[in-house]
Length: 350
Image (cartoon, rainbow, N blue to C red; front, side):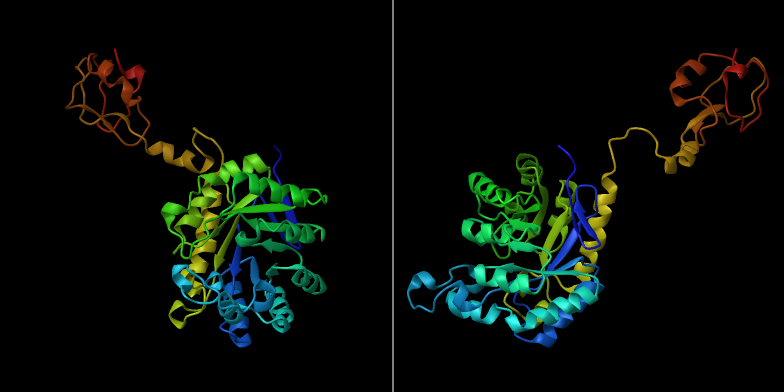
């Protein structure tokens, strides 16, 4: 299977490139454009490569209805109606242009998650360079097809999806000739626990779907994301806020600026550490080989004297005979007088 890559402006997402880190703003702006723009700036300062928002209104997501079926039973938002939650969390569409412009000016790729056809059309009018399909929409085949028709790269979270559902969604994208696909392993609980993250799925997902893979990580901290890099993740999406203490609909499982900075740095270190299968000394280790142990004379030895534990020892550096020869040496005698500090060699042994 060939190494895949997706080019977006001056960024490359692919198997052979460092992780592409996405800061997800979601509703952490708390309905303040000033706060939203500060989130953009802090994400850029942390080194993020992309800034993502979500494009919907309460009315495009659901209806205002008192039936219990329209009430959230997830712990973080338990008891809230879907309509009221989305009304609070949505990013006003009139803010999108300002957020996109700020992110672009700061060197990041701005993009969004659309939730219906009208939001796709709106994002197209803004010149969106790529799209995200959320976990809860990964079975919405009409939406997926609408996004696939744009020809833009698609990042899709696979939270809750069966393998059959994933294959159906990927097939829906590819039928429009769009093969710019990234699938993110995701656990759709908020926050998610490391135990339920199952990141061992990542290489299997990559190999069965023949796509670039990553993680949409709802756990606390950065450990799961960094570990995912070792398993092949090349995209990391994390919710981002200015301060968890200041609140926000997703702040409880969002990273703060210093944590995001650490994620960017440590995920890149994890990627760089992968290297290749190697059992030989690297070029940087060659000088260190000198400080392996070897057999040295540690007390003056007369010609014909037997070698023993008092006059020869295995010590650093490595200029003498290899330690594996010690038993043989201890059964032999010196051919000549040898001064203390001399590395032992066969020409000194009878």
